[in-house]
Image 1 (cartoon, chains in turn blue, cyan):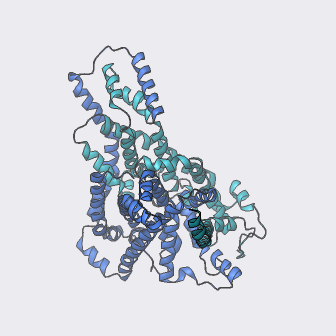
Image 2: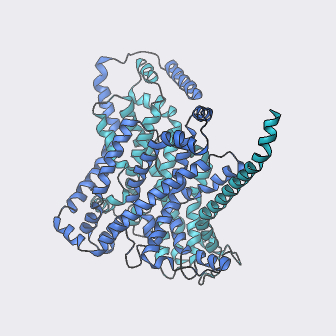
Image 3: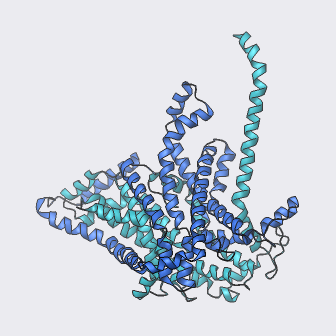
Length: 306
Length: 295
């Protein structure tokens, strides 16, 4: 921090020295300043209008016919996808967040092997989603997948054909989602825990709080906001998560593990009905919008430092 | 005093020791379980890639006869699915670099206008950024593909770059704005008193002082573009314009493709981002506390 300030000072000094004061920046130039500000903002505004506003408006128009929704709700695959989405997001996000929160406490230990474990632990975060999920897909293959081979060779257990049933397939998707995303959120919570001043724990120690009570009365209240905001953000992102379902179970067997995001893409590009696809995705909005509003409110009013 | 120790010590110490060794055993067990959980899919990738027989996978849990043949095949593009592999690799790099440059450029300009120039109604722009930040990419994919065709960008790398820039810039603006608050306004004012134009303030004060944030966001954008799959799959169709991600998916979808080639392609594709993550690990992990979150 102090080095940044020094650097800043140095920069400003050289700047001041190299450029003699020949004209003051005052009143009359406000007009050009305004023009410059607009010019600086224009590239982003242009990107936003051309690639966000226009597609969103077009999407809303595509999915605006009420007949689409009667068609959608008469499709059992769609209703199934709604159920899957609720389970995938509900279980996946909450389980992941709870585990990440607890594991962040484990990774606060000062032992050398815990620190080196953290280096291995963040591997799923570093691996791109696509190859990781492809590997998990083959890992779970019933005939010669690594998991069943290992179960057989080590314990003599004949594993199930994982991706051949609705519940196991859905479970595999949720597990893969947790595998990929848990390290990132664990690191977030580790950062949150490290920001808690040590004096608070010392004070709690003085008052006789140990173990669970330290957790209950110091850690938990201080990290509650971070946990809430992280969970909201993660829920919003996981609603649109495409890769885990598309590559691990592939939506199978017989499209029984599709979620709204993958089903929408399938309607639009495999079946070739973009209107139905947009309508399918739009059905997530009643779930999505309240969370977006709540999240924006939280981010603005409480200054949660993520 | 000594009496208290004598009476309390022997009774308490074994229990304390027992509890300690129990905690230790529990944490070691947890550690081992975590390693197995974390490494299994990656190990599986390596295991299949090292398999020497392309047609029949043996179902072993360790490579009985490890061979690097499949990596040699990738290197020489010696299989018809891999004919354009290095060209596609170049496409991925091109998209990544362009996304990086444009995101940093557009994001820093916008954040300068928002944070340093006291623009009226700037909340409009920052809300637009926040809204894009929480918009799930897969929800926008269907209309985006149609729009891209309408712009004449079908099967064009620039359509993908536009999509990645659109999703990376909001995060860039958030980070830049938070980081920019650390830079004192007095510096801008001093430069302006000396007659510097906004462009000069941006180039000579804002950008140099923002360097750490620029690097963090640039890395983020590069990795986002490299790792992203859905838009590349939907927007790129010819083998010449495909990226590695799309080529990998073609492998995955075909029934006849040898698994060891597929998995070694997956490894080659994963190595650059893994290397970047681990090289910048300390930096990325502390960078998270800087502000803004994006997986």
